[in-house]
Image (cartoon, rainbow, N blue to C red; front, side):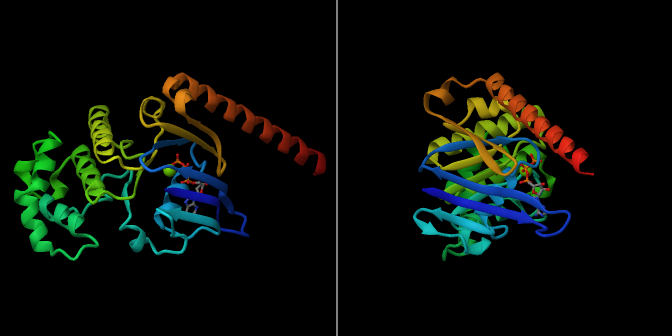
Length: 270
Ligand SMILES: Nc1ncnc2c1ncn2[C@@H]1O[C@H](COP(=O)(O)OP(=O)(O)OP(=O)(O)O)[C@@H](O)[C@H]1O
Ligand SMILES: [Mg+2]
């Protein structure tokens, strides 16, 4: 389904600011799997998702989706197969356009069906029902600009739009991080509903150990551009937030040891 082989990405290569964001990532995700991605700040989680979405090209490695090699596909071409929701509620939608217009755009993307037809659908048909089913009372505000909605309402709509065309892959990058706890819970509930209903293959980045333990069927932990833990099956079913926190502590300790060792080496050679 999604097959990543040997992905590498270095930013500012050959300069003092060089960052090796991905240092050889191999990952195979089966169709219908819901994978949570965790890891410390800067461990490469967003770079991984951005590489798959095509925000930039990887330096090395291969990305296969649905059996197609998309490694060199431009972002807009991948967008037909991939739905995404980012952390920022303001990034996924056009603020001056109405809810109906945004939905119409999302539902007609990559299709020949005209925008005006889609717009009609957004006001009356299945689209309206889907909005109503979110339970946010937005079906009566379809002609309001998206910019007038709260962050939680916007993320819910962005999520609906991202999943609308049943993408081969759904990418969620801390999509509840900017929301208050109640809105975050609501968006997570919707996330689960949409993924379950359409059996969407999903990669979701989160800093919430609660979410990582309770959602999905697999957790991967990244550290310094690599996948260092991959938990699935019964082990995932039994996983508690504390287990994940303990693994974070191990990573921190190992990194501190590495730093002390590097410092000692530096001290010896100056
Ligand atoms: N577009 C970019 N240009 C330059 N450096 C980048 C870019 N994107 C990421 N990086 C760097 O690559 C490293 C990994 O970043 P990334 O955003 O993937 O981390 P992350 O795991 O998503 O962290 P966080 O939990 O803070 O979101 C960081 O050092 C970051 O500064
Ligand atoms: Mg990130």
